[in-house]
Picture (cartoon, helix red, strand yellow):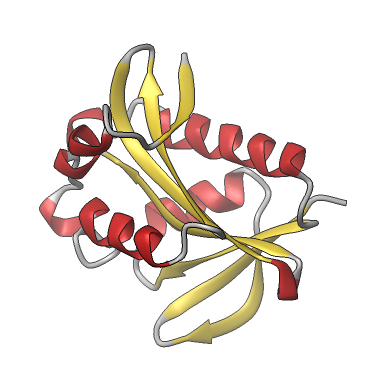
Length: 146
């Protein structure tokens, strides 16, 4: 079973040790870099560890952007040892459920680096659509909740 848990002093170091495959490093920040960004804006940024049962297998982080009525999914990663097992899909579905229940915004947005077809297709599979904008080689996606 996949669960999302807030980052705390117990799972912080485990989260930092997670890494993607070497050919994916250009597509996602390291979790350490992401967690440093969280430290800059704790009021609006939420980092979450992805667990399969009691094992940490990934990381997601989103930012609440009230002025645009959206949650921006800043990071989604599954450790290289756990990729290909459906955990990314299940984690993204859990995150969407979390965001809908949170209720502060009516949509989720994200960007995917051009060429990262696996993640792009994952977002499409859970209902995101391309909003036909690309900035700095990143494809903008959106999922409306209403």
